[in-house]
Image 1 (cartoon, rainbow, N blue to C red):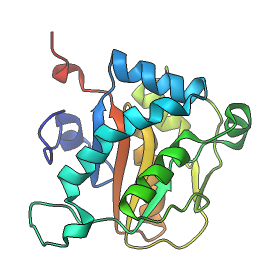
Image 2 (cartoon, rainbow, N blue to C red; image 1 turned 120 degrees about the horizontal axis):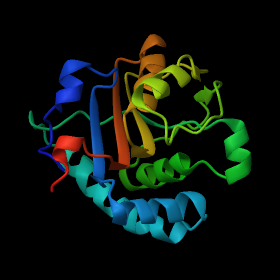
Image 3 (cartoon, one colour; image 1 turned 90 degrees about the vertical axis):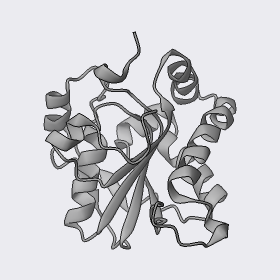
Image 4 (cartoon, helix red, strand yellow; image 1 turned 120 degrees about the vertical axis):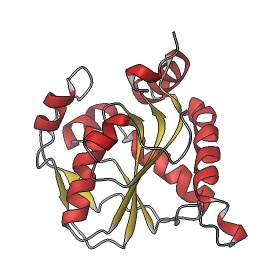
Length: 198
């Protein structure tokens, strides 16, 4: 991963609606295999291996909650976790929302509440994988509906961040509803082309 706290060139050119993102690892051949085992083959056993790097990255960015020591280098801990909603049709086919399972693990580890029904996905059920960044943004326009009041700082939890379009669209909906700060925590993030070693 690149140095924590640094903005990538894409975020500097087109700032997203979310304020901060934490990823456990790069989305590469190894992490892709594990995430696909978990996501598409309903193999929750691999989730333990995927969660450990994310836990470490969260603690590095935010500090340990139990320490309670102020540190200007660390981010403020969020108030609540929001799993990335999936369309009801996709949830019925898959049988679960992988983001909810990840959020539940994070919530237990860091004693944070999970609000799994605060936001619903009302747009297209079309998969985002395989779409260009522009097509992703188009398909996600008005895709999320916030159904309850939420506190100041919310974290969106998901498995993978590719272009960041889904997180950006959800963060936009959350901020329109009154949320002041939105962070994103993911198991893995696709590195920008310039960040991939040759």
